[in-house]
Length: 234
Image 1 (cartoon, rainbow, N blue to C red):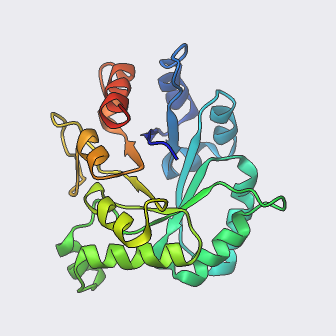
Image 2: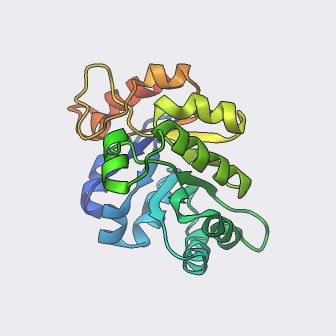
């Protein structure tokens, strides 16, 4: 599967996201778009259909985490939205991940890519130990979650670009790594603590990078997106 840049459209309304996507009208390459909680909760499932109708691939980033049966039923609903990728929290247990995969798979056997969030890129070792009472090394926790996801039949994980190479070593090159926490060398890190540049993420084997504010808040979002594609995809 080829590498791609996913643009995090963390907007609060349909008007805002459509105004942003209008800038890409006429572009040969339509951005792969991430729809997160803010936009989905503000606009509902219709926003997925509207963006999909414009020719964009969609990563629906809702990070499901609940009892297995509830997640299975929710995934069954999401499978009907024709998204290209969706996710859940690996911390929800193997039983939950297995149930999610069952719910996401359509009667004809097709389904979107399903990935698991290992550890949020805003979480560092201190926060994991003090807030979550997880005393293991953060890299070991990420690897454990990744192995669990693979064992359950998921396609990959969301992880920091700092961990992508280790995930591939542990789970194979076909196991996808989707990495947020990517910033241009001259960008503000914001609230991300474990970050890399697009070029660095390419070198260590990330399959997809998720980039938000360096593109969406840029003076020229199209130029920023094209720069990101150039640095990551080539």
